[in-house]
Image (cartoon, rainbow, N blue to C red; front, side):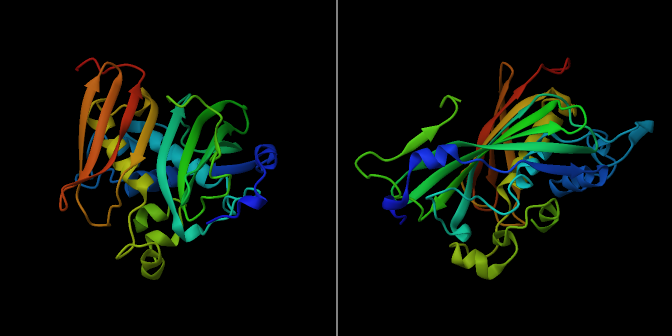
Length: 285
């Protein structure tokens, strides 16, 4: 439980996160695609080969839209530090991810990340923290995408007056190992001892990896393999996934929004739900 005597909201809202750079290459984009299962069942899959290979003479590989989630990982290389907020990094859980895409991603780029506090909520025994990362192409200055990451910090609540728990949002409220090589080195996903401290019997799969699997399935089934049809992505992480479990993605089309949920076949439990907004529909639908 945090100490409410050391919390000052004005200091928190005035806090400036450092601006950072993030560079990726075609190899990084291809490795990410492989990490979320591209071409895993069929190495010659016509819908997915473009993510890892210059198919039919194409000059550059295509980049999956969920690759954007990695940009926010590089924006806080030393973790999340806010004045008056203390937490144990081992007890951090990734709760939600929202991504807005403003233009297709180049196959390699140098990005400039601007990070800001999007929300902080005192839930008593825990705190909910929202961090927003806007990623700009370094050379052109164009905004490529925005990530809003929601973290659930167990044991970090109680930092404000319990009669009026602190809650702040900057936006309207309506609003495994192979994957690890993409840049998320949280030991929760690889170290059995750390996993046990966090309350799991063994290391768990990255939530963003599960999100990548689900959105890739939507692109293949609804978008007919065209990643540029994706406008925005929202995912809520409901339950952990163990590496090796079978993911099943179900989806329903409502106008230009795809409602989806992913479940683990072996345990018959829903682990992820959300939606994907599209720019348009494939002519064959």
